Length: 232
Ligand SMILES: [Zn+2]
Image 1 (spheres, rainbow, N blue to C red):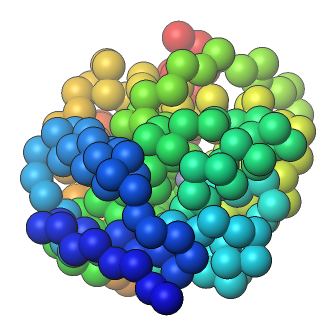
Image 2 (cartoon, rainbow, N blue to C red):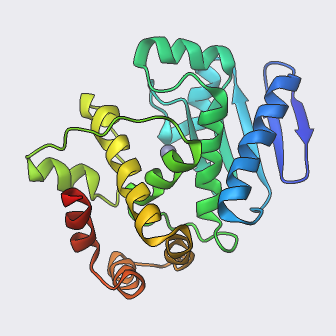
């Protein structure tokens, strides 16, 4: 059996259970938060709801991790644990237990991957890709203890690749760090500037292109900006 509900901007699919009204309303609300932030709609995408570990694993493929609650598996598809599965995962691994916040986070990735046009599938630096999602989901966060070990910082925080392994520092340092750095950029330089930067992400963008665009838009290098943030 397959349950499907098609709305104007996205489709919800569940291969196990019927889709509840609560889920539909939550998806709409999470979509709305992103639409408001980006000031525009995004392109049509699918939301797959998983009500078992097995299904979640199957749908997440390479992105699967026991602690993960959802993921943007392509620029037109997100996979999330259903309400009960989120709670189970939360009890074991913490993070969030809110379906709404998690959906808002993953939908933000879809907006970013298709901003300002469809299939601009370059993520840019992970700190910004995840930082934006944590800003839009709007979860209260504590400022992290920034490690003195710069190699940890470079390897994890300034990385352009996804972190595969969950370390203890993952949630307590990395996500909050990304959140506060992104928030700093928005508060000090404005949301519009950040959207201009994200708008320069294009399919074959290289790291050097990104760094050049960053400097052009902000009038300083990314590294200088991070140092400025750390001093603030
Ligand atoms: Zn994310």
